[in-house]
Image (cartoon, rainbow, N blue to C red; front, side, top):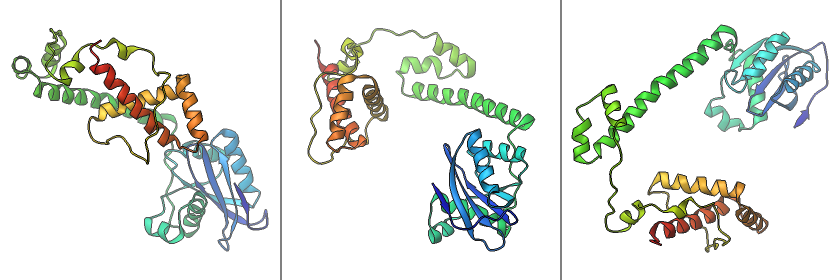
Length: 292
């Protein structure tokens, strides 16, 4: 994406605005004196792309400042490059919702807004650097917070399991806390599994067929309209269906052939995955309830 809206004059001062993303940054060059947009262009988020952005911006004149949105995340690499390059970088906040409703929302508009915010003085903050000791401390704090949250989350999961556990097991561990409870739970061993009546009992029994390679030669039938699996119910079960479908689409040749055929018929990926999940759910149900 490249647009040129004005002439190039090396003696004029310009301000650059950048809307940052994961893979591509969108930049806009605005003339300081008149606020006219001289050009917009996108660049890859690589060192070569950063160098191209700086060279391209300087081709319009002397770069006074660069307004950068998201300097602490997607724009961190560009911030380091521009700082080492010798350009002044200003932190720009996201445009408020009223502004976006009034002028629209595109990457180009966001880049232009970043440049205009710097020119008007609305944006004047110094970006946070992510290098040297500051970045080292930040990385350690992130790891520490994760390590501190993990035991708390695990303890909450154990507590939830104890609440719904059979009474003899609850009496064994409910009065314990901390490491004593963890050691007591770790010392537990599975007993004899007794099957109850109904589908729950049959589902609790081992089903070696469920461990067979994914996929069968049969194809799921496309139902009329756009029905979908119930979004309520067991979230873990729905997640398992989604994962199985994804794996089959990547690794199972019959499923890959089915996806190719349905795509050629005009079906979207979402619609194809919906059909596959429905078939997988029926197949799993038959395996779970088949005593043979």
